[in-house]
Length: 97
Image 1 (cartoon, rainbow, N blue to C red):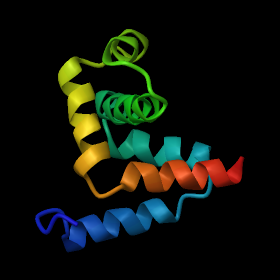
Image 2 (cartoon, one colour):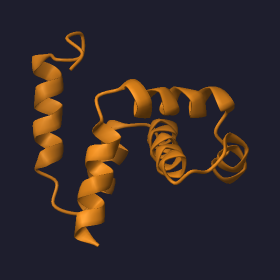
Image 3 (cartoon, one colour):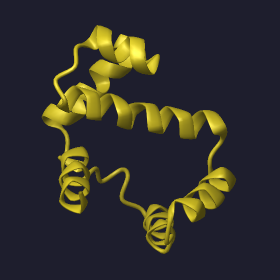
Image 4 (cartoon, rainbow, N blue to C red):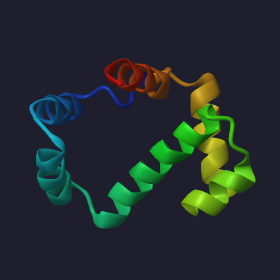
């Protein structure tokens, strides 16, 4: 965990997020907390991560998501050298299916 990220304020935000019960509540909360562009950027990175894990090429991902190669590369670096957060979530979603 990045020590620069670990603050009391971030803890409070994450605790608030953990109280959300469904997708509609997520929309309600995140529309207040984030700008539309911030939400679209976060969701784009998530889609890029799914596609990278699915074996898609940078070109396929860029065409489908509109993400730049810099964004795709950054997400790929997180997948390969990050904290495994994406993979944790992907595994949990696979368990639900």
